[in-house]
Length: 363
Image (cartoon, rainbow, N blue to C red; front, side):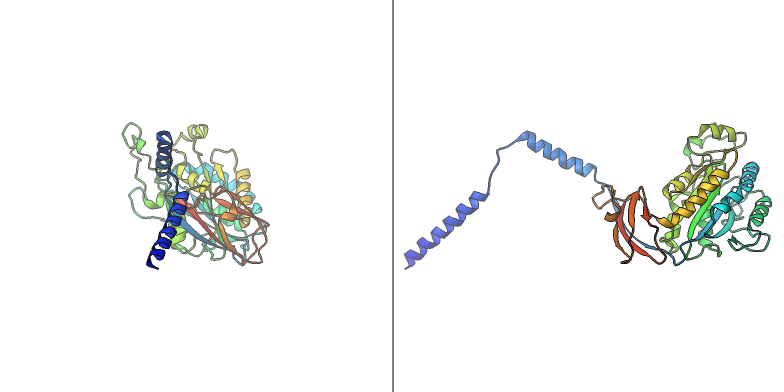
């Protein structure tokens, strides 16, 4: 019996060893293949993208046509004529907002005076009726706006439009409603802190008047989105519009160089990130671009801005909106299209809709 058991056990082991060996194959050495695989792995490691996870909740307010608009005006000495052009065509802008529940307030780019004293720092200016904003129900709203522009004090040459936007949001003096989208409009003939913090100007030959100043965190375009997030407003629809010397527009730059002038690099970056209108301060009149801004604001209720152009966890670009949308109001029936960092909805999102998004941003 013991002998039969031993023979049976040996037979079973032989069977399993044979079965296992039949599943294992050994390829002969192939230097070219091994080198190619090593190169592939090294390429993947070298090109791996660092990403951060973004979970974004979009809540469409019960009154989706509510729009708050902050005008940030460069009130330095060189800006008299551009401010006049804005005044001349402000009626175009108001007309283009027809049907919206709009609210408008104003601040300036002068955070400090020439002595470094804190002056405006993003505070809102009062209209002649004593209010800090005008809205779609304000009597003589256009005249109130024009009067305010006409009586702005002469401001500092240290223009800080983006900084002023951040401070206005942080102060939140009542112009920015919880249930409204937010738009900012910057009118300026210079970059942030005049030279945009461009180190190439930090020498006597290129900056004889010593205008160069280093940028601070709130001067950079990304800071506005971070401020909104820190204030619990990351779900708010935000768009920035610029009327500036557009980067690369050398003719406009030369025209404005009768006084100190620089391309508005940082404002343009914020405009591009939020899909706003990039206006031209050298335009003969501002009617058309103010119309475009109004139309852009009208269209905003049909789109959602992401924090970046979206990627997946592996660092590959996402091209379809349905790869981002994790959940949405069950009764919501709409078509989504992803363009850059904006998801557009057709038809537009209804009041009270909620959407949950998940994607990655490159670091």
